[in-house]
Amino acid sequence: MLRYMKSLINKIVHKLFKRKQQVKLGLYGPPNGGKTTLANKICQDWLGEDLGIASNIPHETREIQIKEQITIKKDRKELTFNLVDTPGIATKIDYEDFMKAGLSESESKKRAKEATKGVIDAIKWLDEMDAVVVVLDGTKDPYTQVNITIVGNLQARNTPVLIVANKSDLRRANVKRIQNAFPQYEVLGISAKTGKNIEKLYSSLFEIAG
Image (cartoon, rainbow, N blue to C red; front, side, top):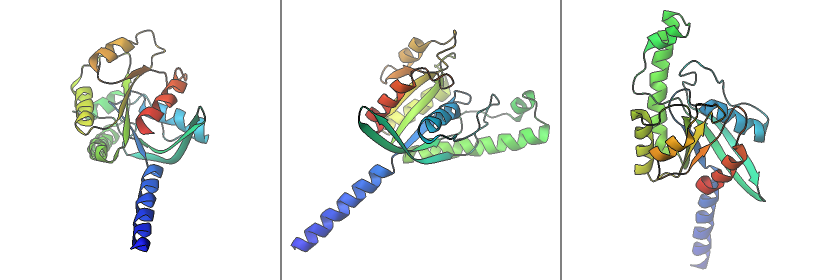
């Protein structure tokens, strides 16, 4: 009996330890909010390498991208997680938007198809997330169907959430407007491009993913 109990305890501890080592932190939000720029900043700070390609063209990220075993250190604490950068969530993807960005018709249609699949995959991955950083463009109106849908889905799942108002270094940014839109969550104004408030972001990650 004693041997059985020891074996059972060892299995439970192993599962808990394994789960802790596989914490998935997802970056979600609409296209061009700065998810990949933020992912690259985190990876550069702690791994010295990028995760993906950031671009001004919508839906540059069309597949789930993962960087495993990122360990951040803050105030003598450590947090290890797998960072999951997801394609931008959109209710409508029109190939003509890619053509406006200078791509050919055939390439635009190909991208639109890939982007649509990416959105579906990103939504499926919501159930895999242990915590999520919702990355919003701080210069844009947060009261959109996409933003409300993302936050609503996370709230329904009781997923720990941090909302960041990215591009807060720009004059048009309005962090307070985003906070008013989602008062139930902490909203942090950052700039993934310049590094503004990134240290505060890391501190907040311990609260939602630790």
